[in-house]
Image 1 (cartoon, rainbow, N blue to C red):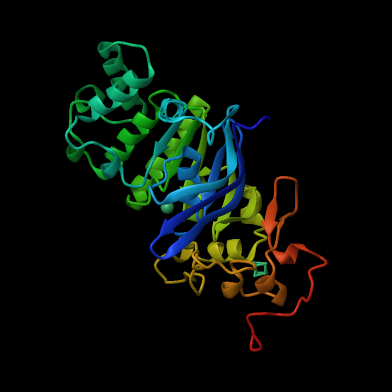
Image 2 (cartoon, rainbow, N blue to C red):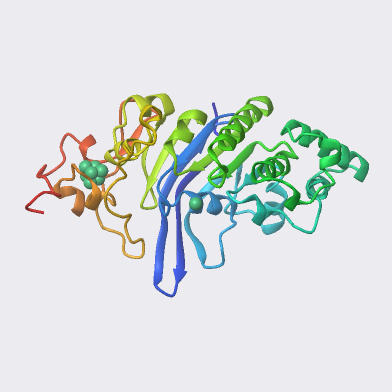
Length: 336
Ligand code: SF4
Ligand code: MG
């Protein structure tokens, strides 16, 4: 199947008073029509910046320094601002963690859906309002016909996220980018929102990029997963395969920190010791080396490439994948 989105060599830095922070370093990713790609990693791993770069919605200090992002035949890096504005909200929908910061508190939620529809579709107000009600029904907001006239503060967090989904899907985009869409919600509501996203993805046939720090969310929702660390892709595989056989030590560490429902509340969580690298001065070798329980000397000195690992759709950036890795001497041990 040809790809809907094909990103290559994406490189983004932030120019701050502390100097240049290399948030995204040469990311390649693809999304096929209709698939759910999960991007997982700890905070600061570069997953949000990757998506904001693709949408060219970076904050002022952010600069895309290289790469391309071809969406449905057009390179998003080359489009002018008008073409981009037209594309966002129309062909690519976006939802964020905190719906309150994206909704306008002074307008009714219905009005905000209507605005989106009128911006991208050549229809009248009455038809746009009918579309808003239809969308509210689609995202299962109870009493949709009257709730369109309510203000954001009259909604719970979960209902506000449903409004955001309605806005994002108003023009039936080919791609939905959801950045930590359930992180601010409690567990029951999280489940409902994730199953809603999955259901709508199936019904509308759109592709989804789901960003999360939670591998449990990926397990329930995604078809394929990309694990990021230090602004790079560390591992990529179909979801069933990565849970059956995680190859990358960082992925294994993330997995060990998923709460086991059978032992929930018993404190069996083991988060990965150590902290992510300082991206204003990233390590020259594997960014995970200082925290990796199986690091070798070569890891700290040379950046591993992304190796094919276990199948054509599986990649792992780790020296363990290289039979010929030089000097397989341990690194994080007493002599390190
Ligand atoms: Fe660990 Fe080395 Fe693999 Fe990095 S390259 S994850 S440090 S074994
Ligand atoms: Mg983020």
